[in-house]
Each structure stands twice: as structure tokens, then as C-alpha cells.
Length: 67
Image 1 (cartoon, one colour):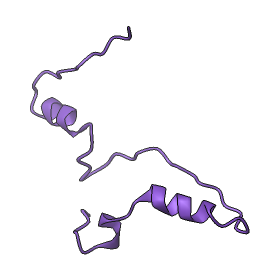
Image 2 (spheres, one colour):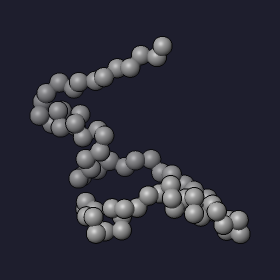
Image 3 (cartoon, rainbow, N blue to C red):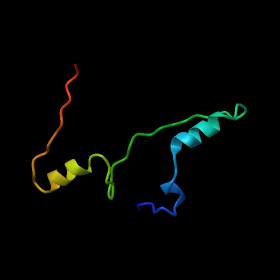
Image 4 (tube, rainbow, N blue to C red):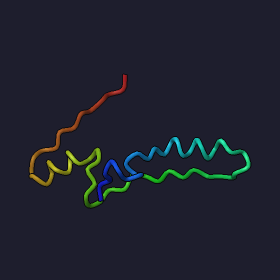
């Protein structure tokens, strides 16, 4: 399910929500950030690599060497 501009999740910004909750000193809160989940319909940062693998093409990696 891909969110549409009319959906609340399309405009959702977790940092703003976290900051709002933390701004209330009488509310005990824990912010839990789960790792990214990959699955069907996920067109995230790894999609170009997965697409190339699916097409039996070589994977092109940009290697950054520390100074």
C-alpha cells in the first residue's frame, strides 16, 4: 500500500511527533526506532540493486573510501 497525498501517513514526520511528545515533561515516553523493513512493494534505497539482480545485470556499487 503506497500512501497518497490525502492520507495522513503521506505527510507524517516522525521527528515532529517525537519532539512533541518529549516536550511534555509529565508524560513518560520511550521513542523506539525500528529498523527499516523490506518486503513486497518496497521501493526504498535498495530497489535499484534488487532490480538489477532480478534482471540478471551486474550490481554497480559506489565505494567511498575514508580519508
